[in-house]
Length: 410
Length: 77
Image 1 (cartoon, chains in turn red, brown):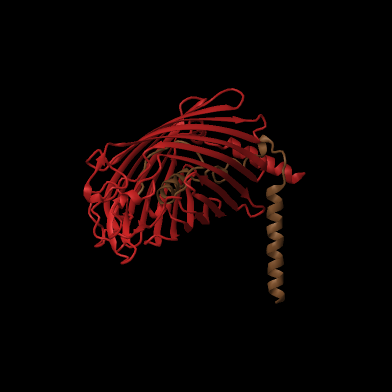
Image 2 (tube, one colour):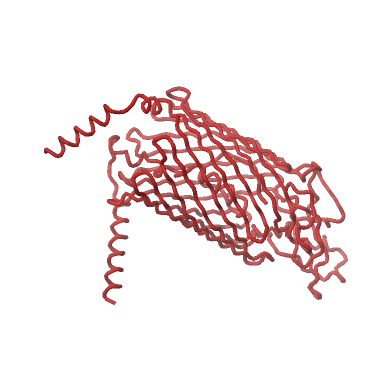
């Protein structure tokens, strides 16, 4: 009894000792989050520098706005789809001026910049309803994207369940840099047959429920469905036609993909704070499937160890496996001396994009965070992504991921 | 050998205890939501890291989505 009395006295004193400044900060709750990401693939492939700033805060007791700005610079070389032995393809890659990134044309150099902006406005209604309106714009040298979204959240009166329903529509325009055109699929690149810009419209729907299981555990379950119609080919990617008898590459043709894609996924996430150590377990699993025959499993597990009440360290691992797309093939074999109409013997769609191959991936990473003060939060992480492909000439992709982020409350 | 069995038994008990703690459902009163209100108990735990991850894996894998809707852009070499 004496102990409880003492605890209550301490708690009362703590409340009374709150400075006007911290009370003010809680009322306004404006914060600025900034981040720098460095992503670099081995063998001088893709390097990305990503800068992002997000500012958000309450504009009334029912309205919260958030504004995000992002700038990416991407450079290096990426697999074009051509086999390593083929002649230079001169196709380039996103944002690039063309030209092979290696002596075979299997790697294409590129240099691209992306600027993006997103805004969201969340309005709280009576009876635990909240509606979040969002918009996003992204501009690259060869890709423009406009997105609008609405997300409705409803919490039960006890706030043990939150139901979410979200809808987003996205309109994308795709073209080769400087040309406002896209290549005619399945044509020889030296024929230089081009069409107009590619356009793609995507509708995303998400339905989810977040459930407070107990005082230390919260879980989330999401169902997502997406329909994309329009241009989904990569205007820079090619595939090689290889002679069956000599096994020598005959030429490179532009790839072609289906004009529609339906995706569905189930995601389960769980956060649990252990007792008495107060470490936090983060676990998630996603099953994904689409009508390009890509099925994937993603498993993420991390455990956050807290120390000194203001710092944490979190080892994390992400495991991923996907099946190949139905139209993926590393090359197209034919007898080039006897086949009078090589394009005529192509299937309807072909892509040699290594990302559509069967693939397994593992990404271990470690995160560190520190509260420099009650309003300043610093985080950093370093990870290593290892991807292993089944049929691609580039059978692995290895990348370092480094990020720092700083959050400031006002 | 005895030590290994002891360690394995300890790990098993810890794992069972953790699973039991996770799956035990209980009513949580508003004044008991201090832990659930912490940033590392939110989805996502770190929006900036999550935002960057989505871009990386969207660009490097054939599957995407599942956590939210919105955003946009490619940046996908």
